[in-house]
Image 1 (cartoon, rainbow, N blue to C red):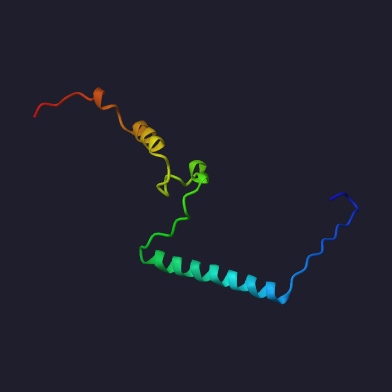
Image 2 (tube, rainbow, N blue to C red):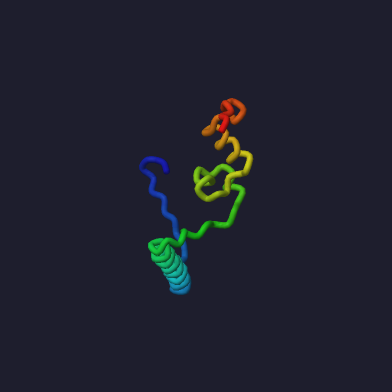
Length: 90
């Protein structure tokens, strides 16, 4: 928006659209309320369906949606190579 210029945007919104929006918001609120109640009783929160975005999502590990190759690479960073561990006689 340029300085000194007022920009008006007009959109139509009727009672039917308002009612539909209210129903959708109430459904979302009811879902959230149920999920929180379930979570308080040790039920995990629901996961969104897998999507291509999962490959780059920062929460992919927590959601257990990271590719096996990436998980294996992360495990290998945290554990020593078994070939480098000396054998112990019992």
